[in-house]
Image 1 (cartoon, rainbow, N blue to C red):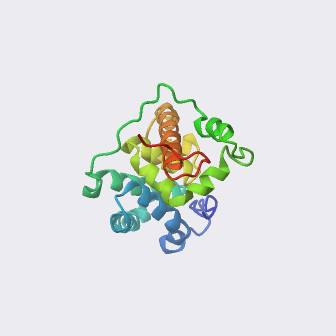
Image 2 (image 1 turned 120 degrees about the horizontal axis):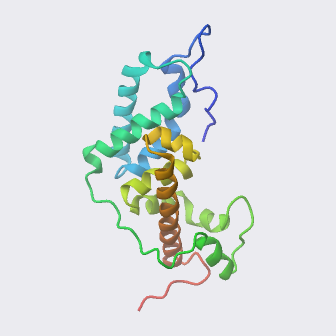
Image 3 (image 1 turned 45 degrees about the vertical axis):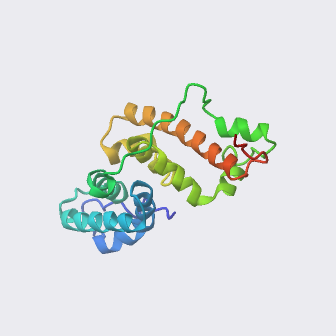
Amino acid sequence: MPDVSQAAVLAPAGQASPTFDALFPGVVETAYGVALCLAAGGPEAFEVLQEAAATACGGFAGLAEGTDFRLWFLGILTGIARESTCRDEPGGSALDLDDTPDLLIYARSAAAGLPTSGDQPAAELLDRLGSERVMAALRRLPREYRIVCTLSLMVDLTYEEIARVLEYPVGTVRSRLHRGRKMLQKALWTRAETDGLTGRERRTP
């Protein structure tokens, strides 16, 4: 994803601010990826993105100097996704987490003999799963966990940035992200076993 953190901040007083048309192309790819995770599929995601773009364009002139355009736009996008009729489908059910360690994928990957070194635990397993399976696992999460996990994993936002986007307390973001990550790891490992990607195919009764 493009790094737009600097370019997407409106200029301070005395400097010419970039226009909406200049800033929007820098966030559209990231925003569409987020919409794909929050909506039911491609057409709904595109509708959410279009509505967010129209809303943001209409409100752009009133933005305060120094506003981070990327976070502001993602706030509009996630708000529309939550309120849109395309999000009326029931969210995923919370998985049983009583026996789920914080680093479940790391632990089980190591036990299965998969490499666990690199930038993140079980990077090879996630690579094997591919973006479509990871996105499908994200969509299985209950909506509020799905949103924070998407912003963390896909956009690499900090706790504080997610809190700004969603207008949540930072403590709420930390709690939901911690639980959401555990749900996501459990869903990803289950899918990897089912698809025979762990080196020990899941047995069916």
